[in-house]
Every structure is written in C-alpha cells, then in structure tokens.
Length: 114
Image 1 (cartoon, helix red, strand yellow):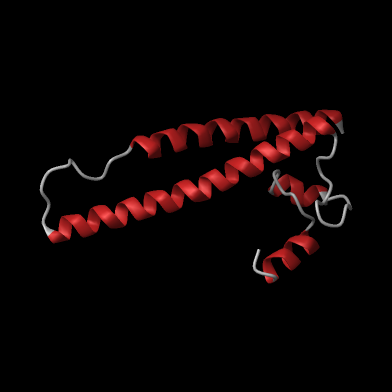
Image 2 (cartoon, rainbow, N blue to C red):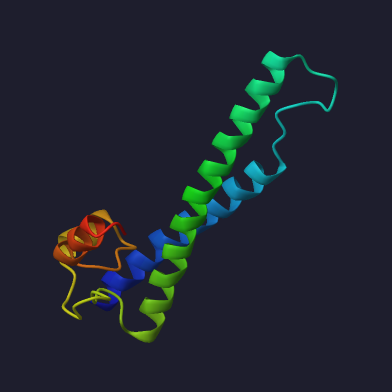
C-alpha cells in the first residue's frame, strides 16, 4: 500500500504543479489591448473574460481537492470516504485520485445539489 500511495502522491503533485502553471497563465492573460473597442469587440472580450473566470474556478476547485487529497495521504486518511467513513474503491481512486467520497456517497451528494 505504501508504494501505491507514493505513486498516487506523485500523480497528485504532478497535477498540482500543472494546475499552478495554468492558473498563473490564466491570471496573466488579457483579452483586450485596452484600446477603444466597438460593441462587438467589447462583447467578445466580455465573453472571453467570463470563460476565463469559469475555467479558473473549475481549476481552482480541482486544485483544492488535490491539496485535500495530499493532506489525507499525510495524515493517513486517504481513501476513506468523508461521508460514510468506508474505504473508497481502488478502482475509483485509480481513475479519480483526489476522490473524497465513495461512489455511493458521491452520487447522493450530487443528487442533493452538491
């Protein structure tokens, strides 16, 4: 199990690094050159900015889940469902290493608007 956790931790750290780079890039990206724009250019700039913010929010959420998974590895609670306390299946963790819930609890969470 220790070597498995080491490989999971490595994957999580690699993804964390990639997300940090992407979030930095997005925060510095500009969609207009601050010159006077016609209404079409303004609409496009506004749409692109909204998409950027949405992408940042999504990636920030994933980043936070990665941090939580890394903390769980460190404190020995990795792979334990945060809702029911049962082990999360290895298959689920393999495909989604930052999973915080078993599949049943995740489905219930999503059904309740989570």
